[in-house]
Amino acid sequence: MISKEDNERLTQVKAGTPMGDLLRRYWYPIAAVSELERHPTKSVKLLAEELVLFKDNTGKFGLIDAYCPHRRAHLVYGMTEDDGIRCAYHGWKFDHAGRCLEQPFEETLNKGFKDKIQLAHYSVEELGGLIFAYLGPQPAPLVPRWDLLLEDHYWREIGYSLTRCNWLQTVENILDPVHVEWLHGVFRNYSAERSGNPEMIRKRVRHLKIGFDLAEYGIIKRRILEGETEESDDWKIGHWLIFPTIQKGPDMLRFRVPVDETHTAQWYYSIHPFGEGERQTKEEMPLYHMPSPELDAHGQPQYQYLNNEVDPQDNAIFISQGPLYDRTKERLGESDHGLVLYRHLLENQIKLVAAGKDPLNTFRDPAKNLRIDLETESRDKFLTGRLGTGGMRRRYSQRFKPLDETDKRSL
Image (cartoon, rainbow, N blue to C red; front, side, top):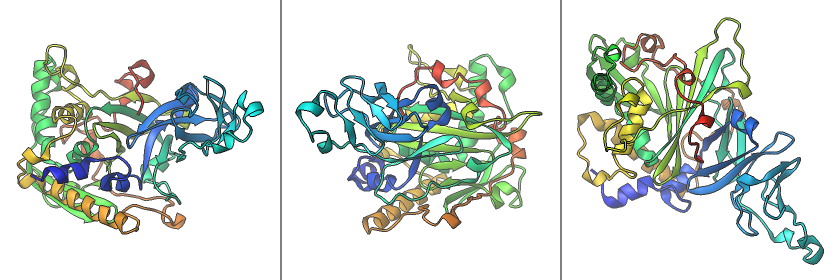
């Protein structure tokens, strides 16, 4: 249990707050490359700031304030050109640095007016088929080159979900090993029965021991399941919470992205061995919608989303905790050491930023950022569904709707 003041401190995302300033020191995915292939603009909300991402006619990306400063028209309707984006309402044109380049009609009567206009603008880069944004102070650090983003010999897919809850409750879930046994085991089987799919029921696994270690890039979570020993790679190797908000497993990265205090964007990045004759470009990576199931119109759980996949189960529980989880009412137990460790780590990194220093996972030396390999537990366990999660190698995009076929809201 923590105080109301500490809960607010840890969950805020706006600029000028201790946590908001820490979170602004990191790069976050805001789109897939394939999205901008279909349409050159996208509405984005990140760290409580409303922005528009665009790709100009030369292929260069820009990220600026979402609203034209003239009459506040949204620039998601903007028309891209070779050197920027033009507002659909009155034709004002802006470049990637937020400068006003042209003001039709005004230019003949109000010379120099455009030079007084400046939109907020932020750094944006592409890596591994994802487009990343950085909203912090300049000079921007390097985009971390996590190993899975650089794999050349795998087929990749990208999932997206906008979950109606604060970012912190999605990240703390990463450091809660025992929930796998219950939410993704016992409850999964219960949901399979309730939805009339008994073939999806699996044998329950039990946790015997869990552990957490601070490490170079964040926190490593370890566990021993029934039938295993300390020689199992789930204990000897474990898997990562990459500070501050990334989960890394055998063949996936999950990015938890703070949208505002009550919404989190989640990006699911998975790699799979190429099938015979398969090849893939960044523009061809499938983009699918990962469900965030809420109660149905009758106030009942939607068991059809909860009887198989891990992530919809997690998302449903995140939402059930409320848009902003009240930690003053929690009662932590022995399985929650990872959460406490993470909260202390957040506080320590807040202090570093307040002292004018770079926080954990700030990369500025290109030689140290060529490729960051992070060992995790064996993929074989997930291939056989040993943890009751299964599906890590199965292609989500073959089972979930493409993102552009759903109610796609801004990040």
